[in-house]
Length: 206
Image (cartoon, rainbow, N blue to C red):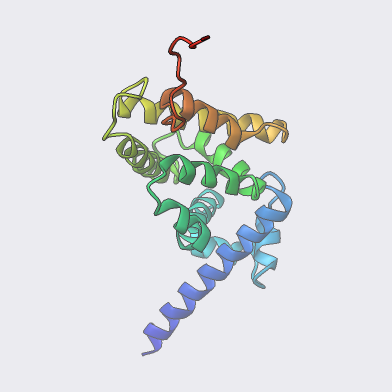
């Protein structure tokens, strides 16, 4: 029983640390978030914090996983993602990201470091990108001939542009990420024009 109680306390403490990290990163940004500040949020020392996560990189990787899990439970994001409008769902996620600049900075910086196969976040980014790739490609799989590219290529292009826009947005917050992605999707997969066709028959001038 003591071991089970100790395990439960360890899980609870990990969750507290992750919540503190999300809070600090959200307020101060990734670059200014220190282990000391995160540890103080839960009343432990930086050394004790690393006891639970091993390294700062491992902690921040788990922060991103926690953020993803939280977004999956967000009623608004869930409601949008369950609609048939894949474009609206993806645009809403990007709009939501503009509300958490510190997390966007963390994501973008770790994504670069995670190119190294030995980096703690490597598998996280690999799995996440492939999951998102299949979701986007699947949304355009049953195409009616409107798409400019095949679903697989379209998914890669949309992901690449979204990642690049995040970097531009971190430098210049006036960059309209949702608007640009919406315009890109409209070019790659033009929306159906529901307007009535214009009557171009000759005018009877009698």
